[in-house]
Image 1 (tube, rainbow, N blue to C red):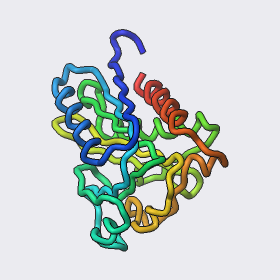
Image 2: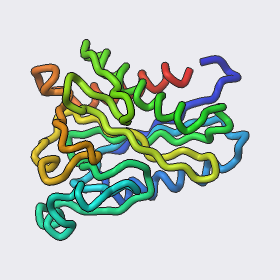
Image 3: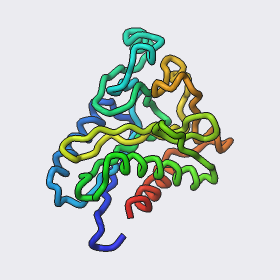
Image 4: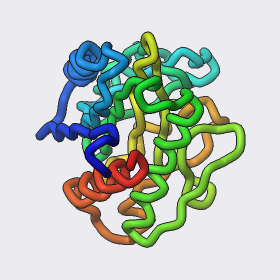
Length: 216
């Protein structure tokens, strides 16, 4: 990346953050990015405490269990301002919020979504795995199972939210929902695909390197 190119600031949060804490960090970044001349992108990498997030496209049919039943499972349930439907976040999953001013980067929201998928695909290649896109759907699949969910919001040209990459997390909570409203298609993890445990630090480093390459 040359000196004239937009820059990337990366923040990795230790431990687990509640959804409210992670969202507050996003809003702080949104404020920093309000100037359309600010050619900085911010990548916030973290693990959430167990939470079901319900995007703007969530339908009642995507929730086989109602919200009180989901909360009874030990997870928060939060309605949020990104696109897409319901998904789950929890320990063992990397959530990467990529925030930038679309005009500063000369991007449309669709190009930004493509970039997020490309970041996930390149991260999988670090582990010698072939991921794929599916026409008409956001996210990244390995075979027939989804390994990375993607969803964004936009405020006055500032894109926020991002992607969640399943690394070592317990997949049982996904069985309580219709993930992303796709007809209960299967989900998988990086560890399952590799046939070995995958350290979150290794996955985070690969994701950061992939982000830098995609944005270069």
